[in-house]
Each structure stands twice: as structure tokens, then as C-alpha cells.
Amino acid sequence: MDKFAFIIHPLDVQDVARKFGFARRLPARVIEGALRYLPPMKVSHITGVRTPYGEVEGYFVGCPLTARQMLELPQGFVLKRIIQAGKVAEKLGARIVGLGAFTSVVGDAGITVAENLNIAVTTGNSYTVATAIEGTKEAARLMGIDLRCAHIVVLGATGSIGKVCARILAREATRMTLVARDTARLEGLAAKILYESGLAVTVTSDVKKALRAAQVVIAVTSAVDTLIGPGDLMPGAVVCDVSRPRNVSRQVAEMRDDVLVIEGGVVEVPGEVNFNFNFGFPPRTAYACMAETMILALEKRFENFSLGRDISLEQVEEISALAKKHGFKLAGLRSFERAISREEIEAIRARAEARLTGGKKVFIMS
Ligand SMILES: NC(=O)c1ccc[n+]([C@@H]2O[C@H](COP(=O)([O-])OP(=O)(O)OC[C@H]3O[C@@H](n4cnc5c(N)ncnc54)[C@H](OP(=O)(O)O)[C@@H]3O)[C@@H](O)[C@H]2O)c1
Image (cartoon, rainbow, N blue to C red; front, side, top):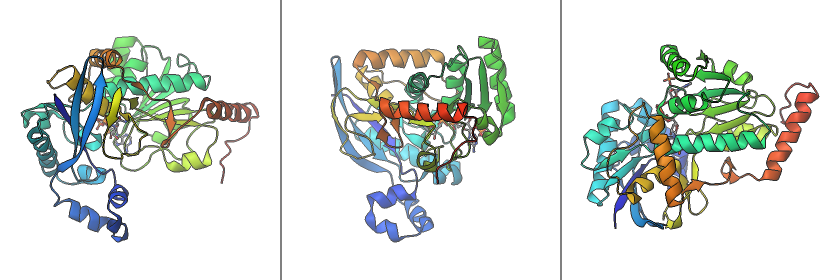
């Protein structure tokens, strides 16, 4: 049976403490200091990925560095660790390896990693884009928002995921703001979008200002700290938070009952998949980037797929079609690690409408 692997890592030190109880009593810098000396290792065996067209098995391989370490440690050191994790995947017999979370953010988004391995590599970002857009559209529809006239904000718009999201949404949007820290790159993207779809987008590096007027937000930055707090959103706003670690603060869930925050890129896997590892999802669901790796393995496409920061619209369309063929689909909408029902969304919508028509200032629960 063909094999795939997927590289995972702790998002933060709390992730490490959840897994290893003794670490709870240790200061964060001690935990991170120890992680620097831990080599990548096999974490679990993934079985039961079965579709009408085939079956594959795989492995999670751990690259024990937090997201912050991946951004702050010397890039050469971090890349070496990710390549070592890829070598573990090779030894396990995987023919393709997916790069999870920040292992695809570091450096050139997988290109150097792929050059140093003898197996195929993908970041999984094409299918992440497809599912983020599908989820955003569904959430907006349920909140009564017409994307064609809504003000859409893409946070992290110049990134591997953000750039294609913006280009796809620009085909139907009439108002869009692109946000990142580097405004020169934003302007380049704005010019490309104007050329491709005729839409003149606004660009800014002021996250808070952009959010204030946003009805729909796709959050896909590589920030390790949250960017969206409870006071930043207007009533009725829809946010699709694709970022891991999250861009939306948990306080938004606690303090704002009039906005809808959904998790981007959560997918139902066909068959009786057993990950033999708890990454906080319900059974038989995975991140879209994991799903892309499985789909390519099922298709025997042992070639590099989503690499670098210029993913094409065709790649997104192709992986979506293959996902459909094999029976992968968006899992129901989820918000802060739990499923959110139609009734709950209707209640959010009603509260938002009442606040907007009542002309009151945004109400923040304490
Ligand atoms: N849910 C899933 O299935 C899934 C799958 C893959 C990846 N992800 C997550 O998605 C996120 C993005 O991944 P990516 O590969 O697209 O990353 P990327 O290519 O590195 O892009 C990151 C983007 O965020 C911007 N950015 C970074 N820090 C920022 C800040 N403080 N304020 C505003 N903008 C900021 C960057 O531009 P500037 O540097 O100019 O600011 C860039 O536009 C990561 O959190 C990753 O873990 C999730």
C-alpha cells in the first residue's frame, strides 16, 4: 500500500505541556530550550484512508519546535530540522510528505525542503485555499451576507494561502482590502488583481483599521500572537480563521455573541481513518493540508504539488476536483474547536441585526 507522511509540530509550549504533563511546571523558555535538542520522530501510524479508488496509509512525523521558534531561530537551523523530519518520513517508506502549520511557512514555503528530499513534498495549501473559500461562502450565506457587495478583508494577503484566496474572491467581490506588513508586496498583488479581475482593492498594514469596516474576513497570517480581539469587529462580521496558531483571540468567543468565527480548512476524510493521535478534531476529520497529502497519495501523484508562495488558481481547482472524486469534503462549520449549529448561527445573526438596526455601539460582554 502506498504511504504518505505529514509533518506536525507543537504550535506553542502549551501544546507540549498538554502532551507531557511534567512540562506544565516548567517555564516556557526551559521547554523551548529542551525542544531545540530533540530530533524529529515518528508520532503515529495513520490507517484506514479508504475511498472507492484506493487506500493509503501514513505517518505523523513530529518536528519538535514551536511556531515561535520556527520564526525566531536561525532559518538554516529550522530548515535542517524540517528536512530531518522529511528524512524520517522517507525511512518510513512515505512517497510524499505534507508540511503542517509553520513547517510550510519557514523560508520559501517548501521549495528548499523539497530540494533536499528524495520524496515528493506539498504544503497542502491548495486544498486549504479551496476549503477556506468554501467555508467562508457558506458562513456568509448563513449570516445573510452577499459576498458580491460585502467588504471583504484578507489578513495575510501576500502569503501562500492569502494571495490565492484574494485572487479567487476578487472574481466576484466589489469591495476588498488586503492586509500584511509589507506594503510594497501588497501593492504588487493589488496590481495583479486589477489586471486579472478589474477590481481595485485597498491595501493597508493597519490591521485594526481594516477590520473595523469588514463584513467578511479571511485570516491567514503567520503571526504567532493573535491579531483580532473582541473590540475589532463590527456586529454580524464573519471571520474564517485559517491560521494556526489562530489569528482570532479566544476572547472573541467569550465576549462577542454577534460575530461568527469559523475555523478554516477542516475536512471530513473518507473511510475509517484512525490517526492514532489526538490533534483536537472529531474522529475522521483532518486539516485540509493533511487531506491534500492523502489525496495526492491516493492519486499516486508522487510529485511536488503546492510549493512556494505562488500557488495557481488551476492547482486549487485541480485538488478540489480530486478531493470530490475521492469523497473528501468540508466538515460542518466549526468555531473554537466545536461544531456550530444552524440555530446558533441564526441566533448570532439575529443579535447582530438587532445591534445594527438599534444603532447601538458594539456590545461587548464582560
Ligand atoms: N488550517 C489549515 O489547514 C492550514 C493549512 C496550512 C497553513 N495554515 C496556517 O495558515 C497560516 C498562513 O500560512 P501561509 O503558508 O500562507 O504563510 P505565509 O506564506 O508565510 O504568509 C503569511 C502572510 O501573513 C502576513 N503576516 C505575517 N505576520 C503578520 C502580522 N503580524 N500582521 C499582518 N500580516 C502578517 C505575511 O506578510 P508580511 O510578512 O508582509 O506581514 C503574509 O502575507 C499559518 O498560520 C499556517 O500555520 C493552516
